[in-house]
Length: 154
View 1 (cartoon, one colour):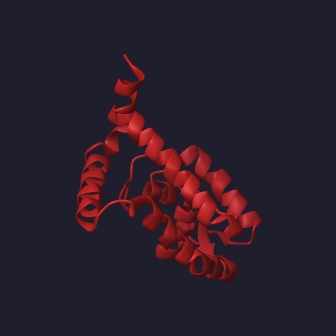
View 2 (cartoon, one colour):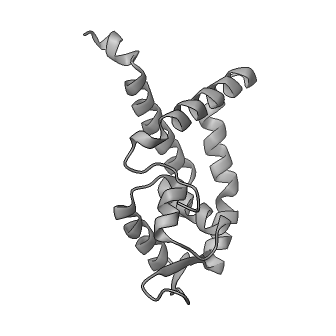
């Protein structure tokens, strides 16, 4: 196989696109000291206050065994708080703090810039096609990963 063949393979292109999107996110969100996974966790907690770590990992398709580390870092920064469940003391429910809510609001423009930088090199019709196709690929292959997106019930 030649390098040209490698560079044209879907898996290689997706890996490179991931590297590029991660780099753009870190560049745009540097002042917030936030990673894409931390941002996704904050968004999921904001969307479903009082959820638990398992459901957060299900909502953002992140490995359950490492979501705790992400939540630990967010908690140490004062962005979230974890409280025992009233119905199951073993379970800890996660909430955004006021500081976490402010950070989400403050970084919105930066996160929007990330999205625009990633797909802004495409025409409007190309963006629509790209997003439809990526959504389809992700949806159809959801269950092959160790961390698929699961419904809130799952």
